[in-house]
Length: 121
Image 1 (cartoon, rainbow, N blue to C red):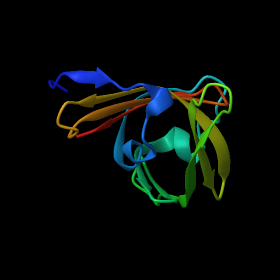
Image 2 (cartoon, rainbow, N blue to C red):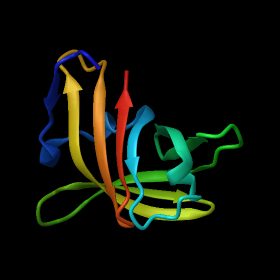
Image 3 (tube, rainbow, N blue to C red):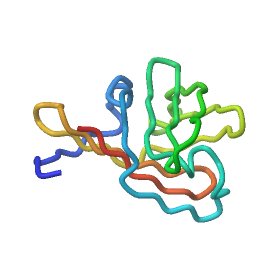
Image 4 (spheres, rainbow, N blue to C red):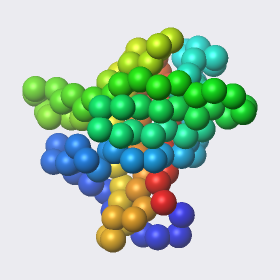
């Protein structure tokens, strides 16, 4: 991504910045099941209340729900994912966007220890 990306203050991050079509740019599994839907996903579509995963090897994706949650103390955003074979939560650790809003980068840290970087262009 050649565009200059600016860090977004996560405490004031609008929830709608998190929606849309995201491509998995990198992933570190740690303790996560390598066969789980999110560990296999190459793309995530976050539509209002609805989640669709597209896996790396050609095959059927999964659909489920997602929501933005915030902790009360620091107002940090978490993404809550519910799929038929997986339910988990991920802390948003970094959000970056271009000045025009057309390019974004999102970093997530999952409860399982999995780390994921998502890109949107």
